[in-house]
Image 1 (cartoon, rainbow, N blue to C red):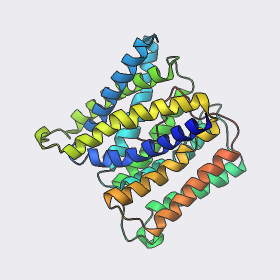
Image 2 (cartoon, rainbow, N blue to C red):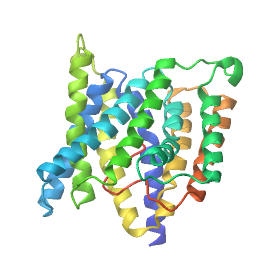
Image 3 (tube, rainbow, N blue to C red):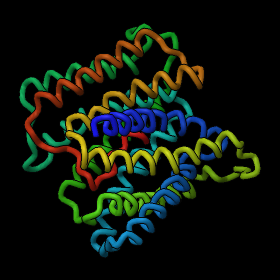
Image 4 (cartoon, rainbow, N blue to C red):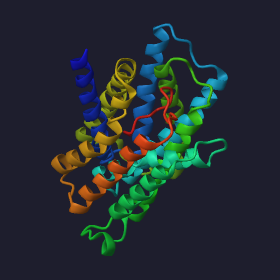
Length: 309
């Protein structure tokens, strides 16, 4: 059993760590919001049909509303903004910023009604973590960077963290299907509706030539659908049932490192010393916060907890 757990965990590290590069490749010739809409529409349909055929009930009307809210916050506000931002931001840097999302969860938990306030160690961890983000995205005169990051891309990624934290906190009390995979599938379907609406309203499809979509982008999209979404979630669900949650949650620390390395190896992204410094500070602060915070669960099985994106 131990060997199966470690193999599944390794698969989760690689799969969810690689989705940032998969997004980068997909949006080379496919509009970002539209690519995400297609990805989650197909993935959601597969999950819902699979779970229904396995005997699980379809979501009720209230559950569809709840999954619609969560899917919009997580998949439009989270994944959609990540895809949009990766037009301008290296995939590894995007993964690292999103990897700081647990810090936003702590802040959100602290300010929501009846939420749990962080202890002083948690506050120190938050301050150190946000210093790491500043080193990563701050002015080049201060960070020592030779490459300036796109301001709007950085804002979109930070906004994605806020949407992700909001959706995750909302999911804690939302009425959701008992089956975590049915819930995930429903969130994907509802999120895909929001994504296609934004894709149409934003005009990103105006002038887009579908015949110009490259095989490389199609491979990237297929990877995100069948490996990033489906294999990733099945592995995650199996690990939740067979491994300690403390071990499973390490994917949040490993994924940004995997994403940074894959971006360097396969996308020729620049790996500056500040990126490694920021990586160590941000991931270290997240680990510290998680080890010192009150025992409150910020993620739920029912919520789309994919740091993938």
